[in-house]
Length: 381
Image 1: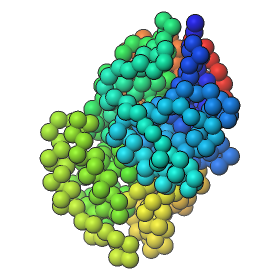
Image 2 (image 1 turned 45 degrees about the vertical axis):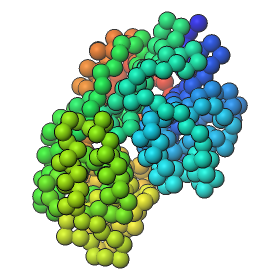
Image 3 (image 1 turned 45 degrees about the horizontal axis):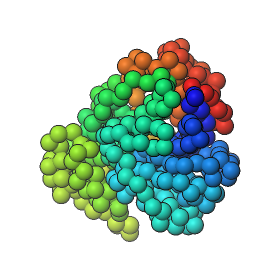
Image 4 (image 1 turned 90 degrees about the vertical axis):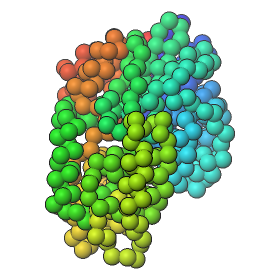
């Protein structure tokens, strides 16, 4: 019996990443994100009846576009097992607080969770589920799902060559769902980092909005300038640094010493004489919402380094020339995706976290890419 894959978000769009795999009467949903670019498609495209039929939900990591709709799923009929790594479960609390309704937050934070291994294999109904570190964020994993003589490699979000977060090699698979967040971008990590370092050297008191986990630690590690931390950021960095098994070897002591030297900044104080790390990366939630508003008011330098949903404060400031943007890679380039595809041996290729136009652009570079697939569709392996 073949695997059936239903696409519930993130296909032909950026955000609300979610797909389900069905086999032998058992169904698993992988990720349940929100779409911060569009209120009309905020939640995954999945019905109450479909949610009620699910046996399990696996969350690959604790970013809003992969995890923030958990409470909504619970409120709308999902009653199966929930699996996350313990580190992702801890970090998800802030995501639910920032993006979920009070009732969704209550349901998500009080739910029972089962531990997903950092590296390992578990049985989930008829499926054999193998996981490994994604290189994208502490607590983040890729998932290889096998049953019925076939398999799917769901990459979630990943970064194959992070200098900070290890990436575990992935097994071969008949099908692969690649993270195409960056489309055809092929600028090397070192070049991107050089641009960011140059900007901060020229603007040593700039504001650096960032997700609370993942990119926050990458930015903190790569900059040599004095650092200041908005409320909540010290605890978030410390929690990531403590997870040494998720970090490149021998980095934790250096990062811990650097954290000891960082200043704490509080609301009501003037902006610090140091670059200020604040959460989130878009100005939509957390301290950065108020910090970006004040930076815009007084003309203070701001460097944005990641995805900006249309209409977000960060996007609006960038369009108005009141902020600058330089990508800090936390997703694969097209060359890295091509290498992942070749290594997997996959014959069927899905691409998530990008628009229809990007799928069309990148299809010639990724043989086998199903450029026509969209959220709401069903395919069979």
